[in-house]
Length: 208
Image (cartoon, rainbow, N blue to C red; front, side, top):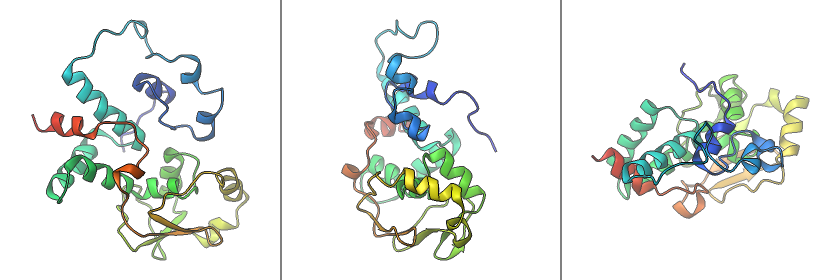
């Protein structure tokens, strides 16, 4: 499976904002973007005025990197979003939010989406009581995502849950903290998705 192998903090610096790819590190002074608020590379501090296409491309790349999705899969999600009723850009973000790895992260059962993907692959979570080890699994309304009974007893997960206990759980998830599970009440509204990106730029890019 193809994956990004370089330093992930370079991605945040390239996009000019924190994408919270390293969990707790992103909230501390150790975050590289706090020290170098410019793009990486020799000419990072001397970027020229960006073109219309450049703005569209950056919106796409920022969104891809935020959710940890590669180009082929991202375009597939765009095609799904086009077929749904409503605004394509908002539909795209809703689809990305419904990925199992993202739901696990939103529940506070992982410190980052990358960590959530790894844990999903290792079979630590269930959907409606059945183990699912596919990070891209799209969770539907009414389904319940939970940490497996075996994983609940491990010290590592107890530490993770405690460390992320202060992170707010979005309103579209009905979280049961006692059982470390959550029911997907609905898909999120655009206002509930904390990604600073103009999704219309992505639609314009792919519509050319």
